[in-house]
Length: 327
Ligand SMILES: Cc1cc2nc3c(=O)[nH]c(=O)nc-3n(C[C@H](O)[C@H](O)[C@H](O)COP(=O)(O)O)c2cc1C
Image 1 (tube, helix red, strand yellow):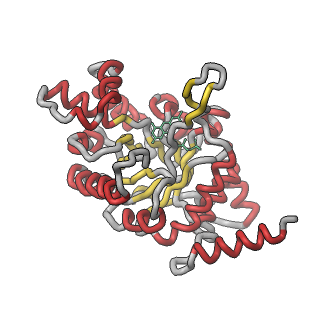
Image 2 (cartoon, protein in one colour):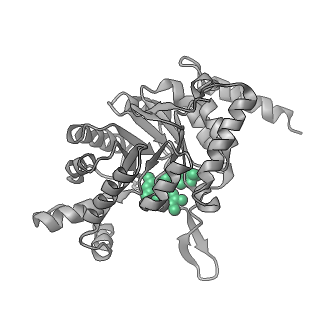
């Protein structure tokens, strides 16, 4: 049975990828993920503030701290000075011990001097780089244009800085989601990953304090990923990797049918252990066998919306059908 897929121009033996998270910061885990059939691994992100800190430490010519405010102070206090060299040693070790593609990851939110540093991912041997662009629309002074310009400036600068494939991980909060995702796919990126997770804020009613909720996804979060994967898969000029809400192999199949080239998982590995990657791959193969598919290509995108199909009309019809029938 052929579970190979081509993703970001790389050949993967499975479409199931270990998404960026704490688990992927440890090389022994990465090796085990490969043994359990992962198609690729996305390393735990480094923050752009970490990079800026490293640039500052090494050059002593750092000026624009304004961009970062308290987050930079936090990072500067808590990061060990040699954390970046440790990180790149880890990448080199991962490359020595793994045969599957290793994708580096940066969590960023601004267009800044950190971008030129991204070439170090390429030098360390990463096969691709995923940018988790964690720009949330919190700021009342930021317009849609400002946010979108940050994306396009960052992508253009990064393309000049590295020659490995670039994928952009986006959140679900865009005013003009479909249009912007399509434009992003025209900007020379090799992939778009939908969706990153922002910290879930919660309130402690006893202490009357803000805090954070469980960071693992709940199964219900899958539906939004399925919806947007099906809407966008045929409208992008790059690969689509789907993530958020995958609990089991059946969820992987749903996202592949919806048109994802790869499916990234994190929460289910935390819940069930790293070896759960094996269950996901076995479940995918069992489903393919039951359905008589010899390769992933035969069913990938089978349920994606057609290029000229109007998502609004189709989803409106589904919506009316469903709610009209409910008593
Ligand atoms: C504990 C934890 C740490 C994560 N750290 C990162 C990270 O450093 N960079 C990143 O791009 N995504 C990070 N993520 C997000 C995951 O890569 C993934 O996109 C998200 O959790 C949705 O997938 P899931 O539903 O399978 O968890 C993290 C997720 C978890 C649960």
